[in-house]
Length: 442
Image (cartoon, rainbow, N blue to C red):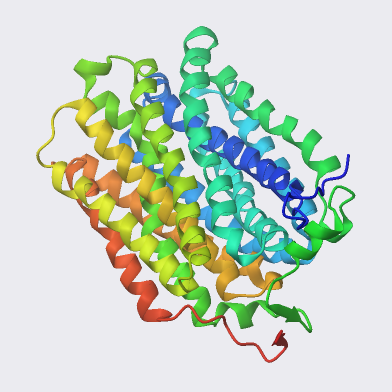
């Protein structure tokens, strides 16, 4: 059956296959987060069995973030050269192999476990640094500007699905079979994704599933390349740093949710949850709400653009709304002691983060040509990972002191307003970067 039908008005319908592609990167992002978040649910078991301290756990997270930062840079460059299809395969194989290697660590003498686990998780971070540069490259190639924020919002919602699947899988496998099998169970899911990616993904012009109408719709971008842009040329563009500093300021909040929420609920609301398995329900609720935020945030700015707002106003107004929705987290962390009230506040904050992130990631293709999206997202991802390294150090220090989680939530609540201001100061009108080797269509 042809993808292109006729609407009742006589106008041809645009095909749908680009949304299948969006589904593929949604699935990959979900599995990436399952692998990453597994550590948070193993923290209590590993701490008891191997006597890990808060500083030991923070150190593992820091090394992961350090490698993640390098991975963004390496894969951002690699994906622009090799393309998203091969770049994605390489990244997934690296992070899945490292994830499965974490299970083997349990067979080693107890004195070797921390250092071996740290090495494996470092390699995991290196591979996972390739996911978002590849996914943003896919969106830039498969979607016109007016649909990109929605597509990014949808695939970025995969982070939330991963955060929902992890507490459904890991605590119960952990209880029944031990922490090594929890790692194996989650790692094998990522390998299954390759059986769908390899046969069903190609660039639009090379795909046998794309109609001529859909291809023409996809290729309506305003930039026409003349030659490949050098990495340093992308690095020193202020438009790259409008994105990069936004990531530096806000990504650490999501890393905090990813690595510390299970431990936070287990220690702060121990009388209400009791065990690591019981933390699943509040965390699932938080990430279910954030799923809605991711898709809604992407839809919101796309709808504003279709309604006649400029890209500049649509993106920034959307991010400002999101920043305002996170603020209650900074205020009520000092006042709220009921777990379910706090779940509601965190759910709204997590949804606002994902909506903010969907619009922020769209800046890579708003401000730079397709051929530079991989490198721009790599630079921004590295900046975000550096912020995550600082965050991990700060969280470890805060939890070791009397400050606890309160200071962390206060900072996390106000940082989005700072990010919007920084982005606006760097790029007041979100004007696309000018390169002498690129010409705009009339």
